[in-house]
Every structure is written in C-alpha cells, then in structure tokens.
Length: 268
Length: 156
Image (cartoon, rainbow over all chains, first blue to last red; front, side, top):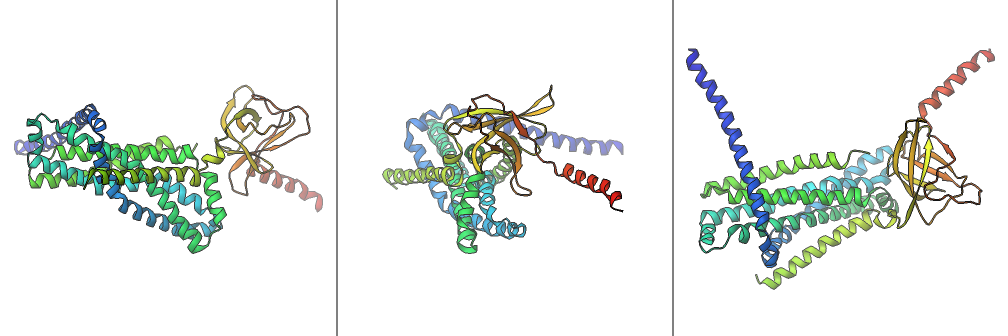
C-alpha cells in the first residue's frame, strides 16, 4: 500500500519541479530574447519610420482611453478627496492630494495597466498571428531578421510611448481634480494651485513618476513582444499568449511598482 | 494610411506628451519656484530637532528662503547638525537666530530665521551662534502639570 501512495507523492513533487523548471526556462528565454531585441534594435533607429509607425499604433491610438480615464480618475479623486479632507477642515489641501496621488502612483500605474491591455495585447496578437501564418519564417528565408524588422520597433514604440502617456494621464487627471474641486465644489482656486505647487517637488515626485512609467514601459513592451514571439502558432496558442500578456503585465506592473516605491519614497 | 499622416499624428502625440511633462513641472510642481539658481549653505546645531525633515523649508518672515539639505548627528556634543541651503540672493547677519517652528498646531516643522542687528553677514559654511530647539509637546505638558502640582499645596 505504501508503495502505491509513494509514486503519487513523487508524482506531485515531480509536477512541482516541472512547473518550476518550465518557468525558469521561460524566464531565461525571455532574458535572452531581451538581449537579442537590444542587440538588433539598431535598425529601429536607423529606419526610424518603423518605430514611428509603432508609436502611432501603440501610443497615439491609446490617447483616447488614457485621456478619458485620466480625466475621470482625477474627477473622482477631487470628489472623494474633498469628502474626506473637509471633515478635518483642510479642504484647501485638495490640490496636494490630487497631484501627489496622480504623479506618484496612479498616473504611472493605471496608464501602464491600460497600456498593457490596449496596446500590449494587440502587439502580442500581431506578432503571434505573424508567427502562426509563418510570416516570420518567410522573413527569415528572405534574410530579413524578424527581430530587427518586427519585434524591436514594436518594443521601442512601447517604451517611448509609455512615459508620454503617463504624463498626459497625470496632467489630465490634475485638470479633472481642478474641474471638480474648484469649478464644481468651490475650493479656493489660489489655495488649490499654490498648496499643490508648495508640496509637489519636480525631481522627487514628478521625475520619479516618469522613471516609474519608463520602467513599466520596458516591462510591458518586453512581455508583449516576448509572448507574441513565443506563442504556440495556432489560434488557441495565440489567444493564450494574449491572455498571458495582460495577466503577466498587470502582475509585473504592480510588483515593480512596490519595489520602485520602496526605493524612491521612504518618507525621509 | 500614408507615412506623412502617421508622422504628423506621432509628432502631435510626442509634442502633447512633452507639454504634459512641462505642465506637471511648472504648474503642478515647483520647478520654477523652489530650484534656487545659486545657493550657499549654513549649518545650525540644535539640541532637539523634533520632526524636522530633509527638504523641509527654511523661512524668514514667513517667506521660503531655502531648504534643509542634510540632517546629521554630532556624536561628541550629542547635538543635531542641520545643514541649510539658502538662496544666495538673501544674506543674514551674524547674530541671526535659527529656531525650529511648527506650521499650525499639527503642521510640518520648518526652520525659522530671525535676523539680528549685526552689520557683518554670514558667509557660506558659517554656523549659527544662537539656535532654539523644537518644542516637544509632551515636555511642555509635563512641565505645566509639574508646576500645577507644586503650586497646589500653597493655595490651601
């Protein structure tokens, strides 16, 4: 009897080991792929129109969702912030609350999440479909390196778009907070802006937010192009890759955000 | 879609994105106000700095004239050594009084400078001769209670 239970237990341990090994192999492959993208990215800057095309598709076409979400998140922050702050008689500090939460956290994080689901998933779908229809192999046959021609421009397009989108998100969000706080509720306009300017520091708050969104841009773009390139070349495989892009991007963004925040803002 | 049109829209996107960074820097942040072009540093020693933080403001007559750039501890004298970075447009007399004050009842703590009457001005690297520590609320309350308790028997 013991003999029959042991294999099941061994099987369980083996399954765990298999999962861990698989994950490690994929991570190693992703790291090598990252290096390959960097090595072959010379062409995406020499033939700049390739990258510009990708900025158009992943950056410019994400503008609508980024701007609308930023505006609404700023307006909600203005409303909720006022609700809470006026209990302590410090509604004048509304500007600080709106600006700091947007530039430090919400701007980079929420715009990266939106970017992953709007642009990251479409990058994965495009590369995955190109792989499934053997366009990548065809390029290879014609001595065109698919990483240099297809993957690297998409990667750099995402990396360049992300900080710009996050900055737009924060700026529109601050405007939304202004609309609700000052125009709708009637917080003093001078206090709103001057308190904000008094406690938001360019290097400490805004620049750290830009650095964050740059890191998120690298992470999301890498995950998107890697999942596309690594997709199983069937309809099911491509759909599984798109799902993984969105899930892994969201997890990576939130985990990286915690790490970056703990290095940047220690409350000194 | 033609390449020219794509170029146009991407150019628009990049310009708007950079304008957003500029808006954040100038309108939301204090890049224009707080980055003093030229600065000099002075040092002040306090027995107790309370909750003073690095980057806290240095005010004179209520106007921000500098920032706290460093807080250290002097292990010989058991004092806090606070380095202040001041705008080089403003100079203070030798007998200026540096004290740690609180904005409002529960607000942030800052260094207040009360100019004295000395004709000589402080130079970069000088140390404040006269300082006043932060007021610790607990000490104030216990002092008050202690005084009340010692007064009580006389009134009977």
